[in-house]
Length: 328
Ligand code: MTE
Image 1 (cartoon, rainbow, N blue to C red):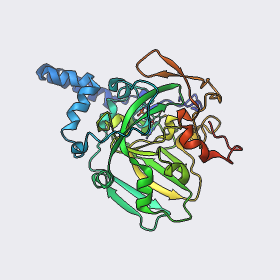
Image 2: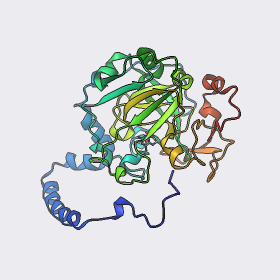
Image 3: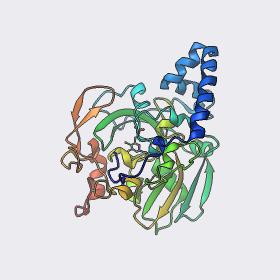
């Protein structure tokens, strides 16, 4: 989802290399060479292997005892699960860079301590510790299809709890019409924030009816363990009938409002990305077709399914909204 509006004279932060960084890097490389020579082979392997990184993080995760979560059989898949090594090493997480291989940079994300603020049109705004939040609701595993607007897809077992459970817990006021999720913003650890043409922080929102739909999930884990940072640890949102850009990662704020929010990509390129962003093979992106999708880690192309195959659960949400741009 490359932005197309960057002006020619703008140089990305990555291309600017101040002198002190060059000098510092030389010192660092000299030190690193020594450290690598002394390091055990497993540490070296971990450096290049996202699965090994994930494995190493597990021991320190305070929620690891909650896994495995019971698997729900309500949402059967029509395709094999994507291998974890592909799902955890091919990501969109622009806070850490615009490439797909940001998994290593994303390890800088500090996922504890972590709080989530719930505010806006609620009777009692609150800030909750992530571990209290995760323990508040029973976790379950659901296998869902996932479709990125760029044309790649995967099928993964998410672990989480229904967003509807959280909404019932906070009891938003009757005037609330939308719920907005805001991602973390810490320029100290994530280089993407230096790219000031992006409308940080990343945010996305849904109507309350969409958020209350049984498919909408607050996700805290995948493949039977807590999320790795590159997938949006410690908490993200999944609405599987929508394109992937509607699924914000590493959420720190949930706001109930009466105004339709403008999401990160819609703010950047409103002619390409809209509020609803429901998957539809018949509505092309302005720059490419959406008729088929490539399954991550394979050469297989599959036909794209309308509503990503979840029409049975969600088509009714959109009756009477045909005048809206539902599928972009
Ligand atoms: N959330 C944040 N905070 N930042 C992002 O750049 N990218 C979105 C979405 N959520 C993004 C984000 C896009 S474009 C996609 S396709 C999915 O995350 C990718 O999720 P995955 O990397 O877990 O597959």
